[in-house]
Length: 200
Image (cartoon, rainbow, N blue to C red):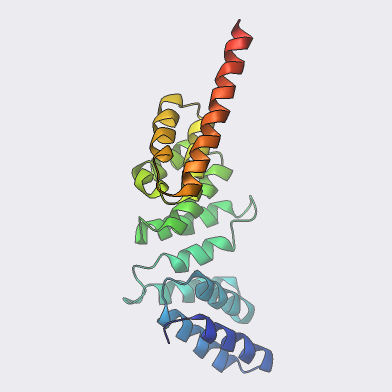
């Protein structure tokens, strides 16, 4: 009852049978069960794009996203940005949707991950740092966000912040995060040694 995936599977089944009303009914049901489910919103977006075209699909998804029951979920906009994140031509559109996701749910790890990755692809390193800096505590549990933050600091050559971050991450109870910190610390050490040798 509290899992959206059986409803999504039924939606796909009704699509194959050509029963589009039923497909929509079970897609809506999946979203109602779990408004934070990105797969359900992505399925809805795809379905509407096929039936009504891109502009109408975005409009309808945003209308449903604005319903009070869905208003705090980043999922609709995480799903929408996914359709535009793949190419440089549509990246700005993806960033606009990803921003809306983080505005709705500022601490949603997936929303932060998507927006920071898009900023990184666009070479907007300062925006990555600004976005992720307040979430260092989250990085102790989520290696993906730690990675995006580290990469932005590293490319910006901000060694003081990198050192502080890696020291913090090395104390994480999460094994994956701890391992990440150890590996990156070694890489930084090697880089500094090479720089010193070059200077000598």
